Image (cartoon, rainbow, N blue to C red; front, side):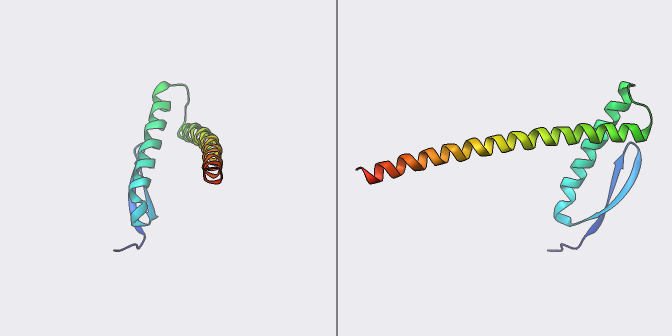
Length: 99
């Protein structure tokens, strides 16, 4: 399989961007560009934010916020899962020690 980085053409707000990335990352990159494009168009169409630079910053800020919320949720779920697994492990040890 060819894992050599290749150029991918992305359209964001009507402008083309050529990005070089590994083949296995292309689908994720294209999906990310589509998500960013949709977010930026939504902001532009709302009329609350003017100018491509401001739209890009606000879209990036919104996406970064969503990412942070998901990271926090992931950390909380990871902690909860660790606690559950420790509890199950403790119960198993008790059963094995006290047949």
